[in-house]
Amino acid sequence: MHAERIGVKEVGVDLGADDLFPRLTIPVRLVTCPPKDDPIWYIGNHQKRRRAMSRRRYAAEEIINKLHEAEVLQSLGKRITEVVRQLEVSDMTYYKWRREYVGLRVDQAKRLKELEQENGRLRKVVADLTIDNSILKEAVRGNS
Image 1: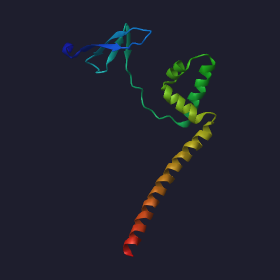
Image 2 (image 1 turned 180 degrees about the horizontal axis):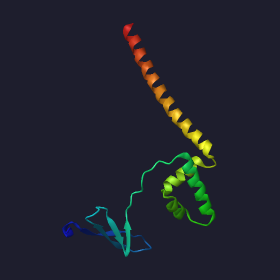
Image 3 (image 1 turned 90 degrees about the vertical axis):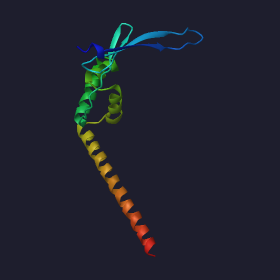
Image 4 (image 1 turned 120 degrees about the vertical axis):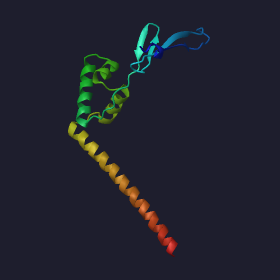
């Protein structure tokens, strides 16, 4: 079997000390298992597995639908942490979406994305033309 590949490392997490509280060290074990080299952290009696969230691009209408669902869940009394877990997005993604899409309808969000893409294309065109212009100016200076 793979018993030799299982690694356990005992680590002490030092929480520091100040005038009111003494130095406190919490024992932490890091275990790596052979099937997946995904470490599992044992803090006290609690086990936490570090999971990477899947990277996915959402369309504008999906984002607006998720934000609407979040509003409904919040009105039912759920906390933000529970809401983002149910939406299967990170809290930073949720706040970014809320900042960007608050109050927009689906058609407005689509138009916003189209305008952002067009703006990016136009910026590239302006950059290319600026480079061409500077090359031509140098060529004219070199000929005179």
